[in-house]
Image 1: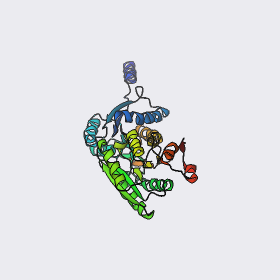
Image 2: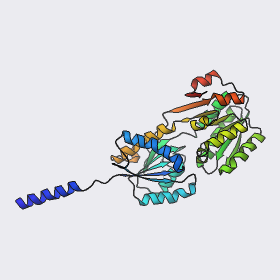
Image 3: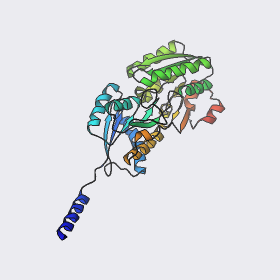
Image 4: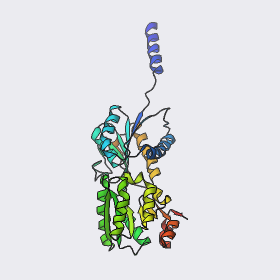
Length: 320
């Protein structure tokens, strides 16, 4: 009897000494490593607030496509072979690649323009399957960005729209903008690009076709070249509307869209729930809770524009 108790105590002691397995998070992103580092820091901050610290009780594997969406499937496959506890997919192309690579590993996506339209989930309230996350509503907000641009530049009858043909949501976004333009008695002049070397020729072509204002649709290729696009808009003297504040900080005229860093921090809450046992199918997809408008008055002055007070009053930040 004493031997049995001693053996039982030894087994308990041996089990107690076994190191706990540290959860592994796989990051799959369509961004470059440099841009992805900013995204990850916001996500990591959210994880730290929930008690998860890389190198202590959490391990992270990073895979960045650097705008080469064709490589995402291979990267997703490599990540799945590592058997992470959760995949955090940044961007619609990354989320689609992750979904193709696994139907069992939980996937949390962020910066997805249209999760239903691109087949990530059948419903925002009931995502089913192994995916959930945060929607950008970038497709739906295209009309709002056009509206704000027209308020700032009421004489703009033709609006040039630059979009990334390798970024699937861009094509859908163009359709929404064109539909909205009809109701505003405006004409949309679209131009698609595939590589950064296309930017200058595309902007010049829009100007030649009579565009007197410029909208840039969300796209990975644009996120990697913020300053270049802002400079091209200034060179062409086109009042510009962008989806993110970084473009306005670089010299663009306006931006309107969800707050990026906020949603990446929110994604941490999704990963935390899954690590604690929740299933993606039971966690509704979250729509943006925070939108922001940023206006650069220095750029407006350089273009000879007077921004209406009604628009300035709606701005979350005015750069002077």
